[in-house]
Amino acid sequence: MSADFTVEQKNYLGGFVSGIAALRSSRGLPPIGGAKGPHATSPTPMPEPAGPDAASHRAMARVEAAGKKLADAERAKREELGLDSYPRMVKAAREGVFPKGDDVLRWRYHGLFFVGPTQQSYMVRLRIPNGILTHWQLAGMADIAEAHAGPYAHVTTRANLQIREVPASDGIAVLEKLVGLGLTCKGTGADNIRNVTGTPTAGIDPQELIDTRPYALEWHHHILNERAMYGLPRKFNVAFDGAGLIAALEDTNDIGLQAVEVTEGHGVAPGVWFRLALGGITGHKDFARDTGVIVPLQDATRVADAIVRVFIDRGDRSNRNKARLKYVLDELGFDAFLAEVEAKLGAPLTRAPAGAIAARPDAGRQTHIGVHRQKQAGLNWIGIVLPVGRMNVDQMRGIARIARDLGDGELRLTVWQNLLIPGVKDMDVPLAVAALEALGIGISASAVRAGLVACTGSEGCKFAAAPTKRNAEEIAAWCDGRIRVDQPVNIHLTGCHHSCAQHYIGDIGLLGARVSVSDEGDTVDGYNVLVGGGFGPDAAIGREVFAKVKAEDMPPLIERMLGVWIERRASADESFAQFSRRHEVAELAAMFRPEMT
Image: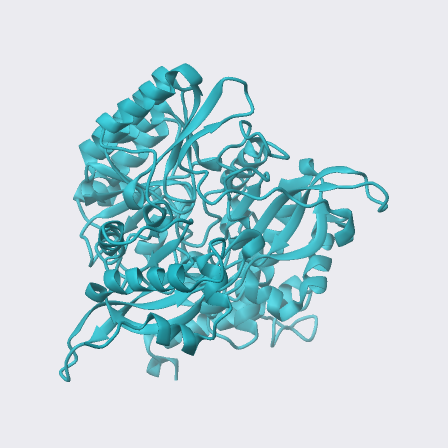
């Protein structure tokens, strides 16, 4: 009867049977239908998964043994993990062809993202731990972009860099040249642990509790060199926050490690620890939640490793929409999840009562731009404004030269899609600012521009429903000429529900949507509009006020929303978020809706 099955059905049945065999073997049980007597014969049992991929393969087998079908991505990873695809990638580059089918996922393990049909090209995303790179690495990136890509780069919301418009023939050349710069793209896409973020001003921040650089770097090298860390059911984000002046948005990550000061008298050694928060995924309306666990600084990588291994075991491999840590925590509960982490560690985690934790210093809302004093006497960091995170190759080379000549030679990327030039002497600040202005780059911005965040959008991503970067610029240009905003405001534009620009945490969040304009099904670019989001101590998920507003109508609508807030706020100190949260959605919609003429 098997001859009557389709290829897909045969593949499913084969995986189902092998999954049962692998699960029974792991429990020391004979195969189903195995030998009963000393002379009986039985099929050769499936071998127990072994090696660094064993945990993920066992997890896949459990799914099939339970009668469920693996997600297509899981099947593809079991057949060939993307890490093993490099020789075929080289062959494809020589032939000038882009990947097809499952290879689109596999190529992403090496940082090559085929973005067709939106663009017939690759996007290449890097891995820059704690967002720190050298002046010569940025200059080298400019050379690579000019030779092999569009002549520009984007700073991402993970304090990272990506270049676009890379042809099929040039992907491998880009990867190899990046290695020559001491950079890597490995694991920056697909079901992997993404670029590790940290406090952008680590080591130079006057209010930080710790310098996050060594901890972020240790985690970076661990995940690069531990193959088991590539066996995840979906992507995974980790962030270290040292309590500095620029927020790292650690509470939006799967693992957030927050530097805290533990006070005396609570049965725990006083000093600086990491507080462990888990399950952040704001695109699914959840922040990382405090677990009550504190982690010795030197154990951060060991504990994070154990958490990831529990996720490998427990993550959903049949439904991609539920295959994130949040859903494991929702299913098990925090206590049961942490018990499994402790089992992986072979030791208990340390708990501390809330009263043992001293209040953390607050981050600033606009400390990522402008001139700010470092903890080192006579030195400053300069936060430059990059419109929606974009800089062309001439600007990249110019910024690198300023960092080399007038700074300490480093550059610091932030989750706010900009970068800092640290180590600038007091006497050199005016010269550095003038040099930046000569590049067409400023260090100050209106409240609207300073808090503007936008993902790639439909001009470079097949999932996006609107050209977010272009629309963000249109909103800023419109508002700057018409209204003066006297407080920081964050406006986040994201093209789809993946929420790369984290629309739910903006004072105003815009989620791309197609807007119907005819009975024939014609649509135009548009957005759903949310208000009242926040992060850190002010964390909140935005509420939807309007649905499917045309993109062309967004600039005047945002102007009106800001104007209503300024006119009707309870005091000059009331923020947009506070104003919007004290009103019901229906009230806000009535106030914000443009007047009929």
